[in-house]
Length: 415
Length: 85
Ligand SMILES: Cc1ncc(COP(=O)(O)O)c(C=O)c1O
Image (cartoon, rainbow over all chains, first blue to last red; front, side):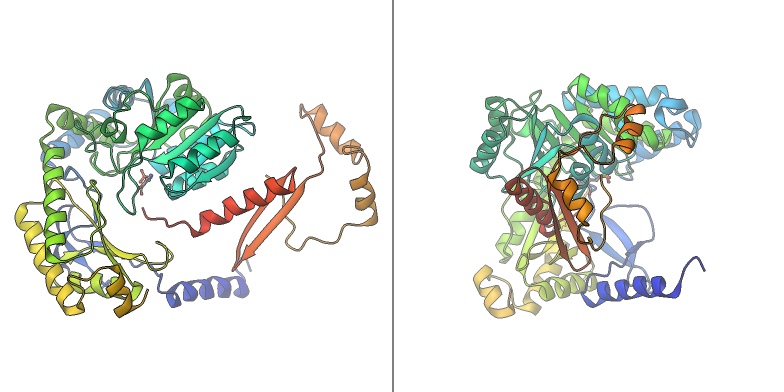
């Protein structure tokens, strides 16, 4: 038999172990479009319940924006549904090239190449560009897709402690004998929402003759005065050599990603990056809608300004209510609960109270660092955030965590 | 990329002899066959390290022992780093 019983048993046991460890992922089913208010069926089989959404990457609230939908419809009519080809055979339309040019202009780089996703961009970029004489030096908290991409590359790899510039400098000095050094970082880190110190990173890279790679998935469209990303916020536009980002978050939230940067590097990816060469083209509907998203963002900064205001408001409301909030400036706002059980119960109770968030705990975050990660959107009205706060306060009271700091929470609930 | 043996057998006498011999002096016919297809074949003595934990496995090859351990530590770190989408 092709699927022998012992093999089946192995997978059954593996799944049971995931359940026993409390790590079994159950999908929450949305009945309707992605938005700041959604109807969610959870657990599966329950009646859908209306909740305020504080866990989407819909930072600019464009996932279901009428102009984006209209552009997608028009794109569908004008350029069809699917490309049925990879880019370099017959999967490149005028729209693909136009989007690449628009992204180049927006990101302030020299050239851009679309990928099916940012996961694919990260999986392909290092392998395409760097070999065994080169070294990739990554922040220890980079996204999982970068870790995978670095593993796929033949280049040597090293890491530096999260945002520790002294440690990065040591590593750069240690690797001066390599053909190329590449500092690899996220622009905004998805767990804590903190920004990479790109100004310092770029200065060090220039001192040690290294390239800088930034994954700006949690920044493109809204971080920086014009929303161009972390490099804009940190004053290093044009000085980042390689940038990857996603269309799957602020930029409409459908799917697709890109590598953008120095023209020779991007062109080498066009020739050699395997996810570009061997995976299908981004569908025209998405490309057409993404072009509209860029129009919207470039016409006005109103949405990113609104997001910034909402973020400030949300942080202030939470802190005033007595929650232990990780300080920061990005719309990723983590509420620290430290204890895994508490974070799980808290997220469940919030859902009952009409607020949709997720709890993160070990091994997703380090032991003793359990939290609720909230993500603010420009689409949130003040009333949404105030209503969400009421729920947070009610649940916070129930669990007795209001006004408590780390030490008190850990004393009461354990780490 | 290399093929890992699940339970590395003890090296045979032949293998041990080959290890102390000039690298590249063994299996010349396979080397020649590969070279005929455009590969430059090079044999090196390396440190091979493995770390296993609950079904996870990391392995490295490196010329120096220090480098091998450093690299193994980096790979193992990736498992313990927090990852959220
Ligand atoms: C930093 C970072 N890079 C890459 C990705 C993957 O993006 P995509 O959904 O386009 O594959 C994500 C999404 O979770 C991310 O947070």
